[in-house]
Length: 148
Image 1 (cartoon, rainbow, N blue to C red):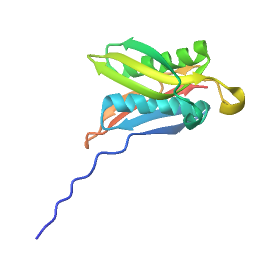
Image 2: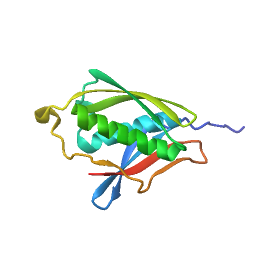
Image 3: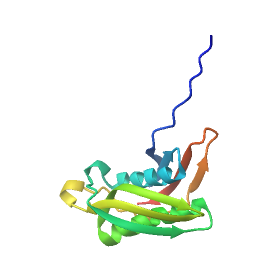
Protein backbone atom coordinates (compact mmCIF):
# COMPACT_ATOMS: atom_id res chain seq x y z
CA UNK A 1 0.00 0.00 0.00
CA UNK A 2 1.45 3.36 -0.96
CA UNK A 3 0.47 6.77 0.25
CA UNK A 4 0.62 9.91 -1.77
CA UNK A 5 0.81 13.33 -0.20
CA UNK A 6 0.41 16.58 -2.00
CA UNK A 7 2.60 19.47 -0.96
CA UNK A 8 0.59 22.39 0.30
CA UNK A 9 1.11 25.77 -1.34
CA UNK A 10 3.67 27.96 0.39
CA UNK A 11 2.63 30.56 2.86
CA UNK A 12 3.13 33.94 1.22
CA UNK A 13 6.22 35.57 2.65
CA UNK A 14 8.60 38.44 2.23
CA UNK A 15 12.39 38.34 2.45
CA UNK A 16 15.38 40.64 2.46
CA UNK A 17 18.58 39.63 0.72
CA UNK A 18 22.06 41.05 1.10
CA UNK A 19 23.37 43.52 -1.45
CA UNK A 20 26.41 45.61 -0.46
CA UNK A 21 25.18 48.95 1.00
CA UNK A 22 21.59 48.63 -0.25
CA UNK A 23 18.82 46.15 0.57
CA UNK A 24 17.22 43.49 -1.58
CA UNK A 25 13.48 42.91 -1.19
CA UNK A 26 11.62 39.83 -2.36
CA UNK A 27 8.02 38.68 -2.32
CA UNK A 28 7.29 34.95 -2.53
CA UNK A 29 3.81 33.47 -3.01
CA UNK A 30 1.62 31.11 -4.99
CA UNK A 31 0.34 33.97 -7.18
CA UNK A 32 2.10 36.89 -8.84
CA UNK A 33 -0.29 39.34 -7.15
CA UNK A 34 0.57 37.97 -3.71
CA UNK A 35 4.30 38.09 -4.50
CA UNK A 36 3.92 41.81 -5.30
CA UNK A 37 1.97 42.29 -2.05
CA UNK A 38 4.64 40.48 -0.03
CA UNK A 39 7.34 42.63 -1.62
CA UNK A 40 5.37 45.65 -0.41
CA UNK A 41 5.67 44.27 3.11
CA UNK A 42 9.39 43.66 2.60
CA UNK A 43 9.71 47.31 1.55
CA UNK A 44 8.02 48.50 4.74
CA UNK A 45 10.17 46.15 6.81
CA UNK A 46 13.29 47.90 5.51
CA UNK A 47 12.03 51.03 7.29
CA UNK A 48 10.19 49.68 10.35
CA UNK A 49 8.25 46.74 11.76
CA UNK A 50 5.14 46.48 9.57
CA UNK A 51 3.29 45.05 12.58
CA UNK A 52 3.52 48.49 14.20
CA UNK A 53 1.83 50.19 11.22
CA UNK A 54 -1.95 50.43 11.55
CA UNK A 55 -3.93 50.06 8.28
CA UNK A 56 -5.96 53.23 8.93
CA UNK A 57 -5.89 54.98 5.54
CA UNK A 58 -6.04 53.57 2.03
CA UNK A 59 -4.11 54.84 -0.99
CA UNK A 60 -4.93 53.69 -4.54
CA UNK A 61 -2.10 53.07 -7.01
CA UNK A 62 -1.96 52.31 -10.72
CA UNK A 63 1.04 51.29 -12.83
CA UNK A 64 1.56 49.99 -16.37
CA UNK A 65 4.68 48.57 -17.97
CA UNK A 66 5.67 46.40 -20.94
CA UNK A 67 6.62 43.38 -18.78
CA UNK A 68 6.33 41.97 -15.25
CA UNK A 69 9.81 43.04 -14.17
CA UNK A 70 9.38 46.68 -15.14
CA UNK A 71 5.89 46.61 -13.65
CA UNK A 72 7.35 45.35 -10.37
CA UNK A 73 9.95 48.14 -10.31
CA UNK A 74 7.19 50.68 -11.05
CA UNK A 75 5.06 49.20 -8.23
CA UNK A 76 7.86 49.50 -5.70
CA UNK A 77 8.72 53.03 -6.87
CA UNK A 78 5.03 54.02 -6.65
CA UNK A 79 4.97 52.81 -3.04
CA UNK A 80 8.18 54.69 -2.25
CA UNK A 81 6.72 57.84 -3.81
CA UNK A 82 3.54 57.54 -1.72
CA UNK A 83 5.60 56.90 1.42
CA UNK A 84 7.70 60.01 0.78
CA UNK A 85 5.02 62.45 -0.36
CA UNK A 86 2.32 61.41 2.10
CA UNK A 87 4.83 60.70 4.90
CA UNK A 88 3.13 57.33 5.40
CA UNK A 89 4.06 53.73 6.02
CA UNK A 90 2.00 50.80 4.72
CA UNK A 91 1.22 47.43 6.26
CA UNK A 92 -1.47 45.89 4.03
CA UNK A 93 -1.59 45.58 0.26
CA UNK A 94 -4.10 44.37 -2.31
CA UNK A 95 -2.80 43.98 -5.86
CA UNK A 96 -4.70 43.15 -9.06
CA UNK A 97 -2.74 42.45 -12.24
CA UNK A 98 -3.99 42.23 -15.81
CA UNK A 99 -1.93 42.49 -19.00
CA UNK A 100 1.01 44.25 -17.32
CA UNK A 101 -1.34 46.72 -15.67
CA UNK A 102 -1.44 46.98 -11.88
CA UNK A 103 -4.27 48.32 -9.77
CA UNK A 104 -3.57 48.27 -6.05
CA UNK A 105 -4.58 49.55 -2.68
CA UNK A 106 -2.17 50.08 0.18
CA UNK A 107 -3.31 50.64 3.74
CA UNK A 108 -1.23 52.41 6.33
CA UNK A 109 -0.85 55.46 8.49
CA UNK A 110 1.26 58.61 8.81
CA UNK A 111 4.75 58.07 10.18
CA UNK A 112 4.99 58.43 13.94
CA UNK A 113 8.73 58.80 14.55
CA UNK A 114 8.50 57.73 18.21
CA UNK A 115 6.36 54.65 17.58
CA UNK A 116 7.68 53.56 14.18
CA UNK A 117 11.33 54.56 14.70
CA UNK A 118 12.12 54.55 10.96
CA UNK A 119 15.56 53.06 10.35
CA UNK A 120 16.25 54.45 6.87
CA UNK A 121 14.72 56.44 4.06
CA UNK A 122 14.30 54.47 0.86
CA UNK A 123 15.27 56.48 -2.22
CA UNK A 124 14.02 54.16 -4.93
CA UNK A 125 13.85 50.74 -6.53
CA UNK A 126 16.76 49.89 -8.79
CA UNK A 127 17.06 47.50 -11.71
CA UNK A 128 19.80 45.69 -9.79
CA UNK A 129 18.76 42.05 -9.34
CA UNK A 130 15.33 42.98 -10.71
CA UNK A 131 13.66 39.68 -11.47
CA UNK A 132 10.14 38.25 -11.54
CA UNK A 133 9.84 34.52 -12.10
CA UNK A 134 7.88 31.37 -11.41
CA UNK A 135 9.83 28.32 -10.30
CA UNK A 136 9.26 24.70 -11.33
CA UNK A 137 6.88 24.21 -8.37
CA UNK A 138 4.70 27.13 -9.49
CA UNK A 139 5.89 29.55 -6.80
CA UNK A 140 6.19 33.22 -7.81
CA UNK A 141 9.11 35.48 -6.83
CA UNK A 142 9.37 39.23 -7.34
CA UNK A 143 12.55 41.01 -6.28
CA UNK A 144 14.82 44.00 -6.68
CA UNK A 145 17.33 46.04 -4.73
CA UNK A 146 16.19 49.31 -3.16
CA UNK A 147 18.52 52.26 -2.69
CA UNK A 148 18.65 53.34 0.97
